[in-house]
Image (cartoon, helix red, strand yellow):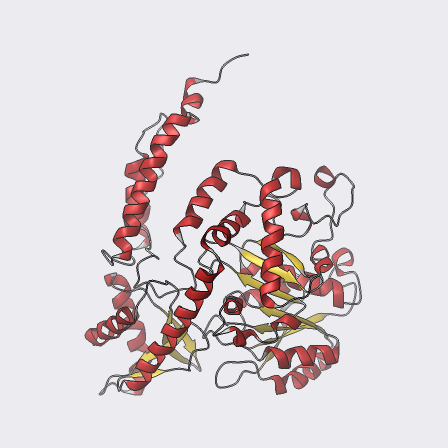
Length: 478
């Protein structure tokens, strides 16, 4: 037996790994300490060309041994989501224990196409998914899978809806094997729904928009007309997609009314709860998702309000067997012509074949930290968002777009003396100033044809004082 080359043996040396691992944890812990103390910028802004120069593709032929130095540069130049003044996109400041799970997952590298490649993660995923379904109030037979993000999750749910409601086998026969299909969606729905139906070959009219009200929630009384419009266009409506925590404003659609409509017309009821399904964990805010237990399918991102690293998305089905119908295809080299409805072979039900051990971090954090931690984090961030909205309403120089349903707040700075025609440009300039300074990170959106500043209060360490300081910083730009 010939030994491995010395360079390969060194790369896999356990003691070298131990030393690097200790250094890595020390560096990450120091970074966590600095950012949670609000030291340094949220985002050390640099244009793309600068970072191309900072991290060139000048890879040496021989080992350099400078991993700690490289990591230090990565930490310094990256976006710091654990900084309490990060209030930008719907991406969490992950609980540190989950990062350690990612460390273990990357080393074990147990893919999850078939049970024998990921036995532990498969069992964990089964229990985590069933637990999440139970939290939402779905019935005993509910089941599902974890997948890589809300876009993949919504596509998975819509594929299952197509198999259940199309009236023909679109999986094998294609999009032209029957009448063209469509789904009814609120005007504010996430773009991934439109992208999904186009990927399925339904075209632009695969989405039939439903008007929203002044709070950006779907108007249930408009569903009948949307259904009739779709039918007049020669489309077969198969589903309604409702939002539980929309991306733009965090709005929760009236889920019970949508469920009633779907039941009346025999349509699939899908809830995009990527952001807001987590509200079910909070005793204070669980009412926001009342009616979600009647859904045929739900998408729920744990990497948003459940403090997980990206990406951990649950696709939950009221009738568990529906999860096998999204991807009704057999790969003989994996499944050996056996029963293709085994819960233990996860690739039968997911877009991915190889999939990382994403259940490990969620299962471990639920087991070690307990469920109350997550309920408290959700309640606290929703409460803080309401107080921030009240502060905006009480001010004379800020305008609130809409009272928040969750932890997303949209607002505008409206200082005296600035004409209304210039307010859109002002919001853009204000955001750019704060982001490039590194003092805060927030984003912007367009509502009703006007530009608004938008914050997602998602870091559990963000305080009311941080948000007040942000308003003062915005005032200081003018």
